[in-house]
Every structure is written in structure tokens, then in C-alpha cells.
Length: 276
Picture 1 (spheres, rainbow, N blue to C red):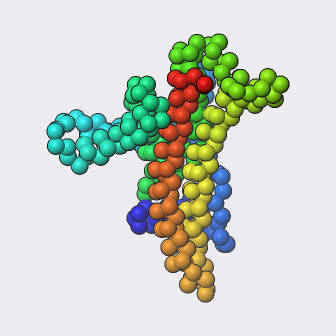
Picture 2 (picture 1 turned 90 degrees about the vertical axis):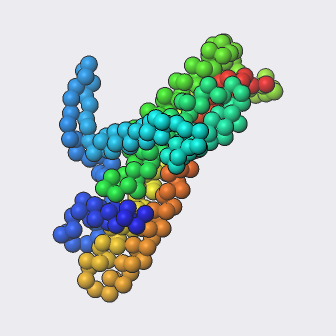
Picture 3 (picture 1 turned 180 degrees about the horizontal axis):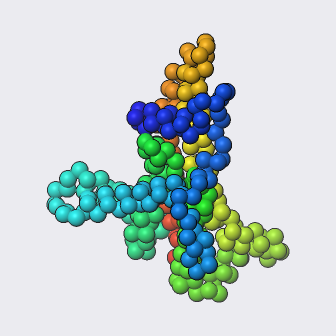
């Protein structure tokens, strides 16, 4: 953690322009880095940025670690195999089975992939020289939410039939007919619009806020060291807060991956088991 925070100080100080006078406050420009490469595919323009590369690195790294952990499985697992199996067991038993029920086991591989992908990309926010999570850019959580939206609606239609699935979504059981004129639009909005939107916003907002807090305290430490007056005595406090926020960010990294996966399992549960 200490090396991560130190790297953050160095990287962000360089990005903010150390030679400028005054404190360089962080801006949202950091979430819109310059394009490294661009190309068009079927008339759609694509850009590869620093955040794109960070996401590729995170995805390849977690995939390689998981493959290496199970490449030569043994009855008495080594540390890496134990870690991978424990992570998968948490998703399979603690999420797929407990939230969805016996029908949830076929979804365990998807939920585990979702969990580890989000976890790896979240972790990039405290990895030295990366120091930003792709999930702090709204487009990435939004794509994940759309994928989840397509899957749980497809499962719901497949398991219940289109007519029953949309009927149950629009008409909750036990609601008086007179109240349906108000309840039905709200339920449809909640299931088909609010669910994916809040799923994306929750992950994005937490990673965005965590990144900005780390930036503020880290740049603050650099500025206080360079300002050259009595303010320098407060630099250790700012750096200490950067360390504290790094540990707090580690908690958020794991928690947000878990929450996103649990919510997806909850939606799958509603799709597999019709409301009663």
C-alpha cells in the first residue's frame, strides 16, 4: 500500500504540472485521456486510451492468474489454487446458491467472471503507475449493466415465457386493481430502466469518488512539500490521509465487486423464479 501511495504522488504530481504556481486541483480531464490510437470498424470510430490499456492489463492479469491457479490442480491445493478456489466458492456458494437457489449453480461461472473482472479493474485504482480504475469512467459500468440487463431479461423470458414475464413485471401480486394505474408504470420503469442505471451508477460513483479523494490528498501532500513555507508541516498529514484512503479504497474495491455481483444474482433470481 505504501508503494502504491508513493507512486500515486509521483504520477499525479507529474500530470498536474509541478512547475505551476498554486495548488493544482484535480479535474475530470483525467477521465478523458488523449487517444493513443484510433480506428474505424463498420463505420464506428474507436479510440484506444490509457484507460483502455489499463482495462486490458487488468483483464489479462486476472485471467492469467486464474488459469495459472488451476492449470495443475492438486488434491492439496497450493496457495494460488486455494485462493482461486476460495474466490470461486464465495461466488458459487455465497451468491449463486444462496441468492438464486439450486437453479443458480449454472449461473455461477458467469457471476464469478463478472466478480473477478470488476475486482481486477477496481484494483487498478491503487496499482502503482495505473492509479485509475476503468470503472471510474461511466461507459465501462454502463456496458456491464447493459450486459446484465440483456441476460436477466432473456433468462426471465426463457424460463417464464414472454407474456408471463412481462405481466409479472408490470403487475406485482397483491396490488389492488385500482392502484395499478400508478404501480404498473413505476414497476416497468424500475425493472427495465432503473435497475441497469443504478447498477452502473453505484459502481461508477464509488470508484470515481475514491479516485478523486486519493488524488486530492496525494496532490495536496506534493503541494505542501513544495510551497516552501510553514505549510510544509502539514504535508505528512496529507500523505497519511492518502495512505488511509488507499486502505479504505481497498475495502471499496472488494465491496463494490461483491455488491454488483449480488445484485445481478438477485435479478436472476427474479427471472428464474416468478413472483408469487
